[in-house]
Image 1: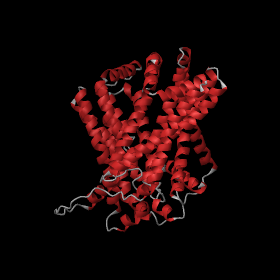
Image 2: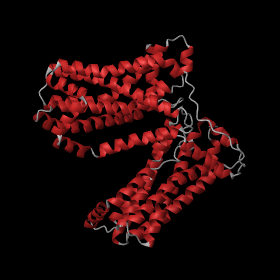
Image 3: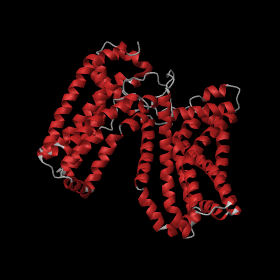
Image 4: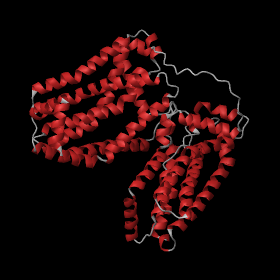
Length: 536
């Protein structure tokens, strides 16, 4: 049992912090940097939730709603655990790839299931700690504490992930049921991921506003919560007043769904593990075959790979999403843009709203790094591309063209949206349409070039080259290294001698020149380097 739990824990954390199979031993400097990054992320989360509950603790305890403080903590812990583990539950229980292997071994199905549940619980407890610890520290610092309340708080934070796991299991079962007959189930997964991401962005972008709303309307919200979710009220009351009866009621309400979920999963685990999750059947229709060029064929190959991978899309294409959403937002918040231009004018920098939009769209396009991991994603199949009787330049250019297609279309759409909402001149419209597109071309070529210099072909899953590959970091840094100096150059020096539109024209010429140099590199040195990959 313990061996199975360790294996499942390693599988879960390898998805979050994967490493290459033949990776060299990390140097002490890299290990220290990674440790500092982990400390920073954990510290930032603790600080964020600690600040949030510090602002809430005084008003809630002073008005006699101390139980609401702990109820909110419980709700956030539940939500954080659910969002953080729902896809892990779906992958570990309903879509695990090693079910057939494990069931062929002399292991009891109940042991396999229990080991996975325990591993998932460990993951949930990790997520719960990011909220539970700062909430507890704030409580200790700002309010008088009773021993019974401390014990009940610890018990509650151990019990809430059980309920979260039960709900996540039900949700994961629905996802598995829906996607089991879908031809493009990755699209469904992508939509869910984007939905969770949108909720995350909304919550944390409005966190201060939500805190103020809670403080001002705490009495009404607390009463509504007490009537609608009585277990949550008993959770808060048990900790705030030390009521053993309330704690017993909450534990029963929280543990019962988990026990029920385990019973249902145990009774149906073999059926779940051996389910044949095929795809929707498609009736073959005879059609004439179409012949395309070599370059077009490779572009379509790259597009199919990109569209079929939610991880690829979520980690490399969000700049385009931000660009479109930002364009619509600016259309309805034109006063905000005018306020920014007014503030810049106060510092002696005269910029029109249209020029500011052009600069903003161009800067956001730098967040797109679709082409950066494209060479690494060839992985063990690199030999197929290298063995084909085609020019290496065509293969490399197809990767850049795929980036231009998937990122260029949102750039054009964003420019059109902004042009509709704002009055722009002909020159401003041309720049608004062309400059973000030109920078998209530059970023596409830069990503392929840097990935050739820093490939990662020995990955186990696509998360490694996409999220942890050095090429993705350097591509984004390289794009920023072009944009930031140009922006600072205009603000602090050239704004006195030329208008923003003229400067943006010069920037367009510079980007065209850099793109031409990158294209020449890919055709010569880049092609030779691609042909040498895998033979080092």
